[in-house]
Length: 253
Image (cartoon, rainbow, N blue to C red; front, side, top):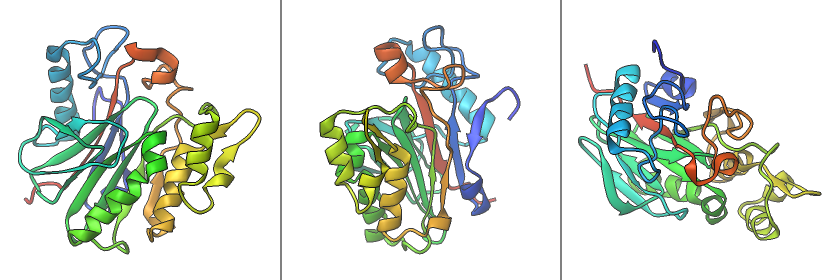
């Protein structure tokens, strides 16, 4: 991946699945969206974002642009096939079982989760902010995969960069909701002041749903702590760009 700073999921790759987490480096968007921005709702031009998509395809070898949706911090899902693009649909879970399709979510502190069952060929990209996490969005994604033929014993998960427990200060409402989201989650809430381990809570939700702990990979990189590498909404506000997390089943050769 020359000239690209894109994280590769080693766990997914070991099972024949393409999984990528972009950083902010390697694109064409100008400040404050410099430079690999995928936030179509931000004040960046569609032309810049289209070029950034092409750079993503070049760097990763993906054959088609990924499917994306309108993310609203809930548990709605969208099944996708064929060549991707932006859908005018509210969904924080995108799924596919089509070899020619890639699915993706945008983040800038929220947690991106990439899921795959290599046996059934079902993949999913999940956008998990604190509200989605409190609502069990990653569990909803697992349920949807299983209801369409996946097996929890085969599902693997890669948790990408997000705001870390070092920086994720929360209010009382979020603390209560996250602490009640799954058994044991309250132990991942720090007090004085209140902080939450967003990735840790989602990891626990996966384990409590029956996903083997050895089938879960975490990229322990804090988006807020690393301004040179990641966009962060909490750090930069509304003028923050967006990373992209993408999962795909490689085309048959």
